[in-house]
Length: 521
Figure 1 (cartoon, one colour):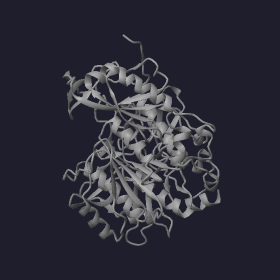
Figure 2 (spheres, rainbow, N blue to C red):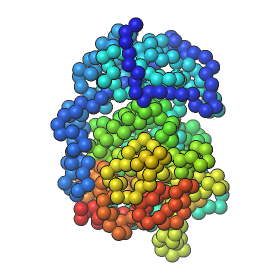
Figure 3 (tube, rainbow, N blue to C red):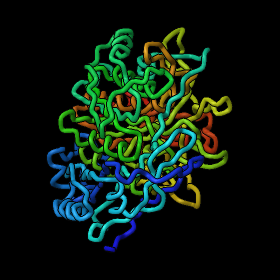
Figure 4 (cartoon, rainbow, N blue to C red):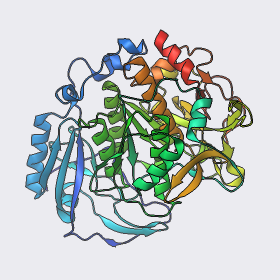
């Protein structure tokens, strides 16, 4: 048998509560996505001006057209993979050098043999899936070329970060919250495109029409992009994944009505998640300048190969001036793990994603709609969730957080602090939206990712340049008033305090002050 090498970070185990009920059908036709290493050209990607903390106007970005030749996959790596696939009886059905993605198609038996694994059917609390255990193995000659192999295991990978409100709470329109956060006047996000990643459910155009008419805005029709065969497929259940999809679109559409909205629908597995992200980043038809992600899972739920590929993709986005916002999770400092454990949510923990935490926001509704009080969102005692946040156990502390006061993580690991920023997320001070034919009130950090995406779109419009990688611009000597510091409350293990904290990051935005600060830099 030809020699193989274990693929680092590809180890999979059986999820808690699941069991293997038999082998996968060896004759079933399936496909996988292979992500290849980056072609490194001069200058190295991390030395580009797009990673700097200087003035936004001094940043220079690589265009999508330039990116492939500079940092895409090398033709010789693709050729080596083609040869190995042909020998294994597997077909190459797609190559995208910019995304560094190669699509292979073959039988379960052929692909299992090519990558040294045995696929099985697994059953548990949330249904069944085709999966695997243990690591993957790479054919000889490919061991330094392949970063990850995705699609053999089809277990659900991410969950939406939203919470429906109970009766009797306070609710706001998205516009009220934007006014309270002083989104820059005279801006609508015109000239920008917000990409929204979705992994289940869908939206009904009549729902969006009703909602936007009530809100008094007329955004452009939503463009949909199918990834890996997934479609806009509303379920009709307002408390299902449709709630996530319509919340994301309605938030972005009201808060940045001049921006174009593109929803990327993909299957809920690691292949779909990565393919959706890279498709959006390299979408030369729609050119998104901001991406909003309201789905995630604890870092421990991801394979190392998935985290590596995703993080590199976010780094690629930074080089092209694209901002990625990601919800920090709704389960407090444990991120849904056992009481007393600490975990942060991925992809919010990626150093190249803007991690978005949650607050409880009280406005003076009887007078000015100004902020009366804002504290950490924590309703864990009533089962209504709390903002995620803490210290990554995967990513080292990025340089932009060196002076932020991020605590040391478990095992004295100096990890990346999560979140970076925050906004209203408590469902008891939630957002009035329209889902599957009825009005509902929704919260969760799912709402904060599109809120920040819309704010970035409006800042981009006002500045005339894309902000891209926002953290280096706001962590270094942030000016007083740029953020509303949240100093009351906790998310379980971490307390709020002045400056950055592991509940709400730098705080919620003052959009006008943030624009002023960025203009002066």
